Length: 259
Image (cartoon, rainbow, N blue to C red; front, side, top):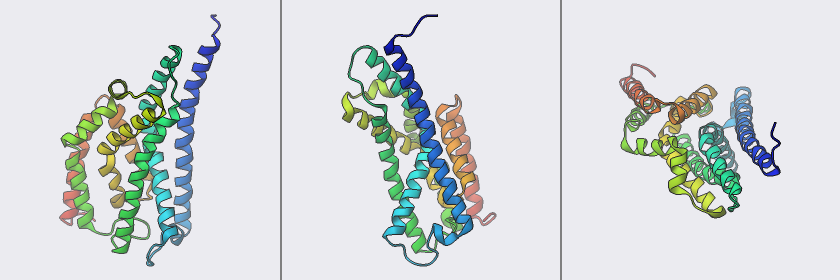
């Protein structure tokens, strides 16, 4: 059995560290969501003010909830891209070229989804102020919910959706065309990948205002669907089929057939 060189051993350790690091980030985020969901079941008022206007503390807590939720949902789907980035980094290290920590790329990705979390928090604030979302964080307007479902379904068929999804489905192609050297370059690549990811998923995330912002079943279902879209060979077909289902669901809600 051939003995590994110190460099080869270090590269293998690096691969394991990246993989288990991603698993740890996702598991911690899901653990926090489970903790919040349990708190809601025990005392709704702990999760969200029922009638009072939100204060700064409420906004901060709600942003933290959305940011962690996006981390739990999106880090698994970004894992293929992050692991390919780490593999490219290993090759560069073997060639004695500058090494960029994979965490910098991940940070750029999370910056984009944290920005989305801030927007989602403000949206929820507005819905709460206008009594369009319940204390259990479920939309109360069939018209708004139906319109959102139909819009999300139509978006599943749009050219913007598929342009963004194609970049998310081709990690190596993305890195070959978008590679930038240095820590700032890695951060920039992470942000750019996050923008593509946001471009194909933001309306799906918005469906949580219809399905339940803290409904863990739907959160897990959406996270699984996003992963399938990105990695399954028939991901594009799955997207289109889901688009038809969302349009039908929304139309039935707008017609008052379902609540």
